Amino acid sequence: RCIGLVRRGMLRDVGAKLIKWLGLGVATMVAKILFDLRKARRLRRMLAQVPRARCKSDFFLGCIPDLVKNKHRIHDWRNETTSGMPVAVLHGMLFDPRSSAMIALRGPSLIKHFLKDNFDNYTKSSGDREAFWYYITMWLGKGIFNCRHGTAAPAEGHSWIKQRKISSNIFSRGNFNSNMHNVFAAKAGRLCEKLESSAADGHRVDMQANFFCFTMDSIMQIFFGEAADTLNGESSAYGDAYDQAHRAFVDYNFSNMASLRLFHLFPWPIGMPGGLLYRLHAAASPTFAKFRAACRTLDAESRRLVAKSRGDPALAGRNDLLALFVQSQEKERFSTKFLRDIILNFVIAGRDTTACALTWMFYILATHPEIQTKLCEEIDRKCPKGHGPTFKQLAASELPYLNGVLYETLRLYPPVPFDGKVADRDDVLPDGTPVPAGAELFFFPYAMGREAHRYADPLTVRPERWIPFQEPAPHEFPVFQAGPRICLGKDMAVFEAKLVACRLLQEYNFTLAPGEAEKITYHFTLTMSLCNSKTQESHHLWLIPHKRP
Image (tube, rainbow, N blue to C red; front, side, top):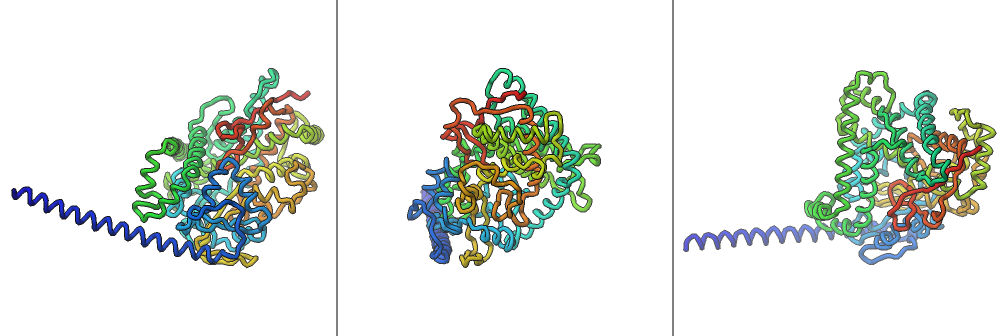
């Protein structure tokens, strides 16, 4: 009997404590909702006079359901909903101060302001406030691509400056003329050889896969001193894992956008990125399981590359990117994780972007035979088979039509079709638009490249619009970003794309495989690769190479 009384007393105590903690949790959640609602209302109030984007908007979820519905055509959706507006507001979740009101920018002066003139006030979002950045940090770490800067993150900003300073050494003119040219030329030669049998038999070839192999093989050698030959069938655990992580990351984040946003209603450690709800949701997702498995493979491969470089007795004679970082450790020894993050960030910067540009460039050539013919005639005159191309020959002044085809490709199919930042403090844009602290700002190179007031007949492919070539202002043509974060590898990417295009067209003409034209669309990933499936399930550019006389 005494034991029973003790047990009942203990149960009452446990019940009282549970009720107490439950009440505290509910009170905390209500307080957080009210606090977030207050911040969200301030955001919307400050932006009340800014034109609204023309999209369907749910009272609680804002434009998120419409965005998810249009995921397969997201860049066209952004273009349509903000067309003709230098600045527009998109409403997100009512209770989420992060997405309650988002600012879309298309005016060049506005883009210049937040990417350059007031650079320190606008930085990347952080993993503790955004699911997207929480998971991208899990994947890419804190490398140059997603490292923050400015008043919001001075420590990360210092790391970003250090990474950028050391990395810039590899993009010197001397390195172009020696190391990079030799690597690109050798890999382009292998690609030409690979196409010989298909050209002889009239078989179709997946050129997107070939371009990703070409850029992967090239950057593994230029950036990491690693010999790779995926063009000829060598397996690449790194490349395969990278693609799996990329696709799973995008699929998980955007398919579950509404759920992940709703988790923000709950305070830490229940809600918010990394909280209990996030972990339970991720644990039940097969897509997230693929993402984590791919990340583990990338981590292991990156650490292998770091260990190999640190133990290389010939390190002092190497001029690849990883060697530059390992050699620059006189004052401080970089951690393995720091170097691992460097590797992962330069893969997406140096592999995916150029491969996407080349894919869309050859899609344009295959579907516009008159452009391909004119380009081949220019190459035959200026850089015939068996000669070059040299760094000088690839200049815009020497091969203007090749340069025009490339820039027309970048205009219509920019490798990074959108990007954004977060305001650290209240600000005012040059046109008088107020920017509340914490507001998210986005700009859309894809949409800007299709503006009729900027480009006559914007959907028509016309390389002549870039002849004679005048370098566009970065904020008017933000394909390579603008301001202090402008792409370090811009010149390398342009040089690489021109070189491989020139080499291929010295040897071959290309036609689109029958039945493929109506299937082509873009893939919804961070970089705009090509799909030959409206359901985003197939990612091939099937071209037929024809040997030129």
